[in-house]
Length: 306
Length: 306
Image (tube, rainbow over all chains, first blue to last red; front, side, top):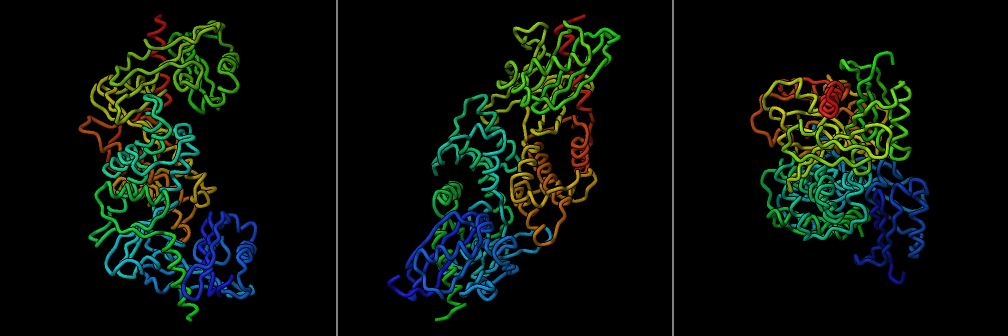
């Protein structure tokens, strides 16, 4: 590195690893991305994975590291616990735990927990995205949608998480596509485009009739048998049905909000944007990658003030 | 066989094979059950599986055989097509197809198809159960619930199927239990009892708030992480959520009926009975095994009148 690194920021999810070297002026000096998420690192060693990426960008030996995500889970590197919701996002950095017995200062940020007996819920990683997103949103009461394997819908007021709900949309899409009678119907289908009419129709139908979701999913298979529905259309219908069901559920329990904020990126972000806008919602958009980096930076500045 | 067989009746599903030898007086002379369903028989040969069971009960060489279920699917023994709904159940026997190039008279009954573009649907095997059930129910307009891997809810008027809806409840329960983040939460749980309070609570909650189904499923995992919910309770909640969602959907699109009929058997039948009765529905109960045998008998008597 030609310029001096201030800290390394790591977003360490279940199946992905991303690292940025941040300079004293806040600029990104280097970036690494890999598939060495928690699942892989739990076998090969978290320390070894982190060191290999730090070495690859010639990071100084004592550069501190701030980490969010599943590295802090019980089955991760070092359990980082949870901050209980309702939670001020600024409190996250203060609850970071230090990884013991390592030769540099490595902190893992906690997740958020909602201990409500009826709707228990947890997040790890998204709280750091939210911390970053609050710097980009104005004050107010927002409903924040964070699509993913386990999509989060967060009731955010100023910089406080009042509560949140996880929908298992992405994981259900995966297991239904791979392991059920629909696997043949969707096999080898290309990625869904955000303006796909079958996708948007399924979103609308599941949002309006969420109780029929598992019937609509079977109808994808029946449509293939009876009407020769293509794999692309089958995949779009399955995805639209699950996302429409999620939207119905996320909005069912919400009173007034100033706006809906979508924290997304890439193809999945585009699908959620199209789904929500087709249902008449005006969105504030925050890039998920920028949000997590901003959140890690905010935490780093609290932990290691200049 | 000491008494003379009239015909063999076979219910050949995806994963199960059941055969009964029926005497001229309608009595069951012999019975066979095995796991050689369509999936197995497609590899080992349908003819060989059938012959081995007929031999095992010393069936006469020319005893005719009537079959319902997945043996008539495209990927089965010989495709038996569909009768289109609305359909008079008595029409099924007339549409049976004969298996060619075999040394006995073997007929496979067709399934039912609903070609409606919005709600395409199919069944194979349940139409024969329905044919049998109509002989046990009085005339009238019934909503018939047939639990299973792909649960069917059928709008039956006298002996005509007006329409039906499949819910992928059983298969979703299986893949969520085996292949998602819930797999650890439900691992090694014992079978759910029908009076399990966690099961009945989840049924009620999903029926009242179907849009929250995939959130409730994630909450099973979060409840385990935060509150140490047991595997037995996790499994009961997952099952109750999916069955409650199904009940909400099945009832959403139905106008008045004279009654709800549950065609079930065993543990799954008991769970559905408890779920529906806990929601205030009075049920007429029909044993699924008796119904399919009665349906096969009715078809046999049409195909081979004495």
